[in-house]
Image (tube, rainbow, N blue to C red):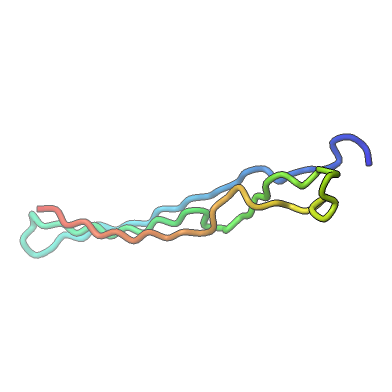
Length: 80
């Protein structure tokens, strides 16, 4: 194998936030609902490849990932 033949994927994480604000009956009350999606497309970026010849069982295999899996956070905020 030549030099620099192992190519890693670039680190790509896309986040998305969706929200809506509602005005409740007394006009001074507001309710804000929000959903936040982290790594919304669930792209996986692998960490470095095992290159050590001392342990041939891991040579050429990925050791783990550099990104987190998809996470979703839901929030509600009431202001008066």
